[in-house]
Figure 1 (cartoon, rainbow, N blue to C red):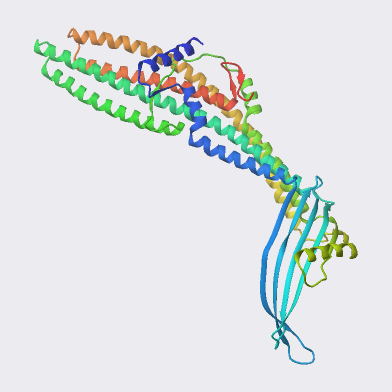
Figure 2: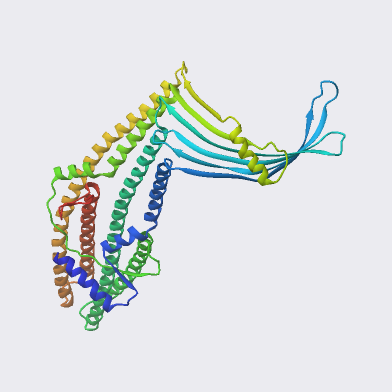
Length: 499
């Protein structure tokens, strides 16, 4: 808690002291930016939303639907052959102009059937030019109909509900995958954050090393003027400065490259100036292996995805079984139809005539009950069912292997955490010792007890130990974050990442 407060205070002070366009980033801040702005999160969010809309589409299949079709107009003129038993065929020209449309209201029943209300009205103006004649025959017809239609599958599965269940499973899988992707992004950002921090410290170490070699070169010149060291030591000190300057430029370029890659990873503009801030104090906490395995097996999204995949495989098995099944359909309709018999007149007269005809004409109606009996399919259904069952069995095997993999990963990462924790303690002590040793060598060089070459070797050793400590610090922090990712449990704060 104290280290976090200090870190926040440093960020606050830094924002006051430095230019306002500089963005000071901690690991948590970088993660929050990546989970909102990165390309990866946007890509996977689109995939999840796509599956959500597919699920909503199947859910909306149970809602009513209203459709209208209009013919405004439909016109054609064709030559029709009329056979004449007493002589040669006759070829008449028929012209038709049809205007009208229909309106359909369809409602899907919870049982998987449907009921529809419909109306259809059209006017058909027809003329016929008889062969060998110049006059035409005209007929103006108007027809109106109103009806209801019902259809219900029986002795079979509700296909719409099955499709909805399948879409729901796929959507839940996409949610699990999206959550798992977020964890992957968090780990990837954390890893690259510490790699960028390492690159910045390597650049700092290279700059410090250059400053030390410049100081050694300055001291060597003074000692050479007083004749206390040979000129070859001065030349060696100058070479060290040139070499360390080249190493510093290389480290700075490497840091710049890593910085731009990190900006792209979390979704920042490449021109945005950033400063990496982190707390180098490492946390200490106990890890219960049994608890870690329990949390991993209970929380991992891969297992939840596998469970949903098994549900999808069971749907495939049911579909395979229905490939040749006994099923039936019940359908019925009731229709009121009226046809104008005037042959000509205004639109209003023709419409009224068709409505009058509805009450005079017998209504259309019908009921049908259709059954389908599969007799023999020469093994098609059996083979399809077996293939689907093998798919389910493969998914079950994957689940068992996944559990073993998860347990193994938990044990591996726990060992890595414990090993890196011990290693970081060792390198911390080595670093303290190396700094004291270098200070002693520096004093001995200034007093003329050792050569510049011996001081350079100790300077190289100090830089190597600084990098070793930095590597151990990064390895430890990445191992802790990997433990959180694998178990979905924070052992330091004793809380789950699921709830």
